[in-house]
Length: 187
Image (cartoon, rainbow, N blue to C red; front, side, top):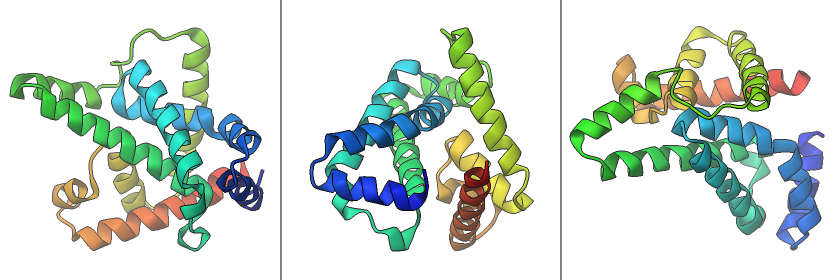
């Protein structure tokens, strides 16, 4: 399904077509779940975030602007932002000690428990596909995207960590996302 087909479904969603939402959900639910799970490291929260993202698609379909990027980029950005907000809320609610442990957990690759063989295989396959695509983009773009989408850092935090202007980081991430979408769209 191409971006044009996604846009046709989105137009129908903005008019209240639930079947079109179901079609987009079927196409992108695993991607959104994998992304949110990678960031929040909690299966229940990831499922809730996945539902929240598609609820927002339902509610805001008419506001999508194709001139600003593709549908899938918008969808991934929604999922990423909701995941980061969940992390920030979680950190805010915890004591300093618990927050430090939470940050350590985010950077660990072994924090998600209750895996099933199927969920491990799906996540592993999707992750391999995305990581292979990441390897095909320039290193500076790859690093910024990895820190944001896999480690949960904000663009401001990435700019500070890398000693770069915020505008430079935003540009790298935008160009990197455009290249990733093109590469993943080929697969």
